Length: 134
View 1 (cartoon, rainbow, N blue to C red):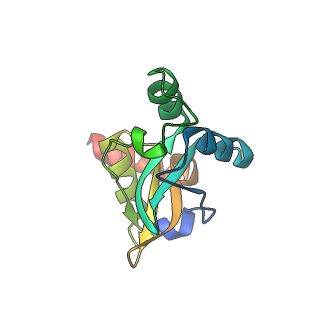
View 2: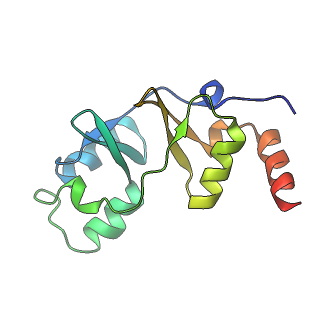
């Protein structure tokens, strides 16, 4: 199996929201970019991600005011990232270990992309799953 690096399959289109933005702003960003996850920053530092599910299940279901509550109010899970020069099997391992569908990709201390399960070649995924099961 040839080595495929995360940088070879990641997407470089980054949509970020500031941690202090209102939840309504985050939801509008998701809608305008037709995405269901945002990278959350505090200034220029990546501090987490926010999914549409978290916005609904933790924000609206807990009756938070979407105009007053901030993205920071919903952050809680550990930020998991992968390095651009890692083999995609490392990305797959991290996704499986943490139950994630996407990972921010970092290089030289900054986020440069996002890799998702859909970005990964299906044959590579099947090979990895077979190896992990063995």
